[in-house]
Image (cartoon, rainbow, N blue to C red; front, side, top):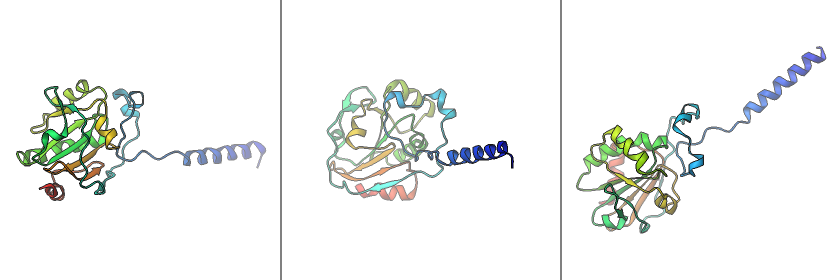
Length: 200
């Protein structure tokens, strides 16, 4: 083997080893990130594809805790806290328009909200930094039948819950946490209905 061929062979092996050292794509949940780190819509085509299966984790270790007394914005633009919903169970969903698994589960949350109307309040609270500018067009495009847009552009709830997005928290009618789930879920299934029924 000539020295030139040997060098080419060594370079090829080096390139293959470097390729194996690349990081795998992030799991299918997202943490709230500073605006500078959020992928712009025009860059989404070049972003790595999310894994097919959602990364789910059901956490019951906070059962009985009282939700944070932080204000977020209701659909009319007025401040509201979770305490205002005491008296009926609440399914609180923290999401953002830039979070793919959040967007994927929204139609199932809308279906669950239709089924649970009058019995469980389904609150989808956006953690988008741009707030209404991002969320209003998203809701208009999807024409949800039962969901209304709540906003938390200061990320107060996701920081208080130390939540990756999406995170969904079930709160009972007395205002105490039952469980929280991190990762996307199909909320219009019998399994989800059974979980939600734990608050009644």
